[in-house]
Image 1 (cartoon, helix red, strand yellow):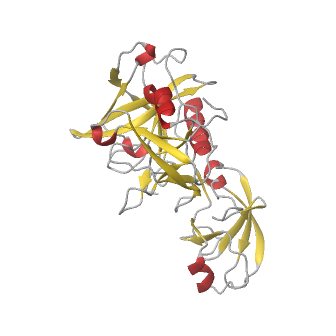
Image 2 (image 1 turned 90 degrees about the vertical axis):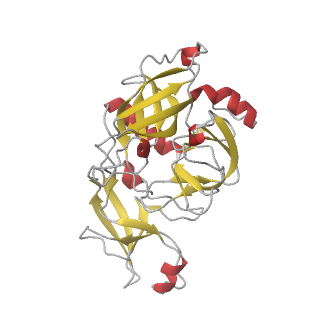
Image 3 (image 1 turned 135 degrees about the horizontal axis):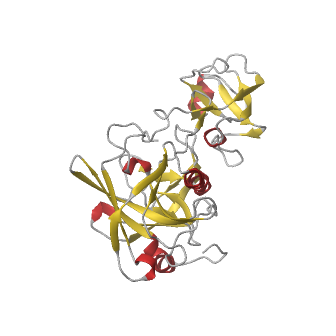
Amino acid sequence: MSNDIVLTASDIYDNMHDTIVSILTIENNCKFSSTGFIYKHIGCNPGLYIITVAHAVFSKKGHRDNYVDSIYATVPNFNGTGKHVFNKCEVVGVAGYTDIAVLKFDDLNMDKHNYVKIGDDIKIGNKCYVIGNPIGAEICSLVEGIVRNSSFISKNTVECISFTAPTLKGNSGSPVFNNKGDVCSIVSNGMPGGDNFNFGTKGYIIKHVVEYIISNNSNFIGGTINCSLYPVDNIYMYHYKFFNNPVRGYCIKDSKNNLLKDFDSIVSINDVEIGTYYNQSSPCYIYLNSGKEIKLGYLSKDTKKESIIHLTIDQLSTYDDVYRQH
């Protein structure tokens, strides 16, 4: 439903309620509820698939190749028949850092069943809507909020959207709709101590990852420059005495790369300035482009001088590319 018309909450619900899937996972006889949504893939391996969060299907053992014992889903208005069908699902693939999993549900017909569209038309202050199945009790309920931050980064370099729509257990995997009825994010996580700071991977990244997983019938393994990146902030600037310098970039920590030193910062990727302010970009290019050569603008905390480094983005190990509470 991509268009320029701003929809009401009721319109979005009426158009999208039969794309919302109830998910049940079983591990060691323990049962967990979550949510997913139906997505249409055209190209290699075409069809309708269910998108949900990876942490709903990962085993508690913590490794991304270990899934729960069983996954089931209820699809409403199955193929437009008015019947709500319960069946077992299979995992097509997962992407750990983005907290995305793609499931296969047999016999969904893309000419008959409804599906979402993924878009990125979202700005801070826009209304957003979460439709899901909280606590396994409410079926396909809707809550409203606004977008707090349309380019939120927390520890893992994957760009997220944070929003105020309240969520509960069971909402994990719920789509976050923009005011035009497109999915702009997914309910993945929230900050402790409140229900109005929730966040999930941004729409264009979801689409990139999902298309890869379905087309290749395999997991998506992200890229790394072998260090953790944290947004440069006031504390960083004060501590390292960067007075009268632009606030930009991401601080390097836990470096396992000989070219990168802890507490220096990366200020650009391929000549695009990065940072958390409105005229800067996120570093998620790293995660999405394993194997590619990259040009980094690099700022030394000691010399206060900037240099250029060229390196190849490595592939994360399957142990490392796993959902770790962002």
